[in-house]
Length: 53
Image (cartoon, rainbow, N blue to C red):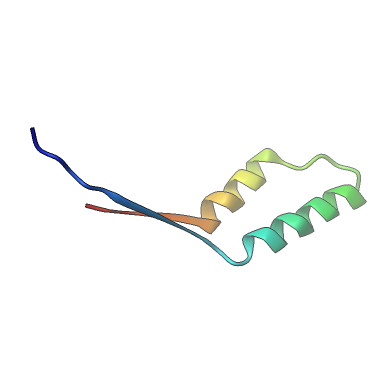
């Protein structure tokens, strides 16, 4: 039996938290619910995952 070691690392962009807070405040101001699709798109752009074998 062989063993494989995989190292995962994730990095989050510095702008994600301020962007989400600004978006939440904007949604609150205009009384609209936040768009799950937009939040998912932002998170996918901000988080980078790297795998090393």
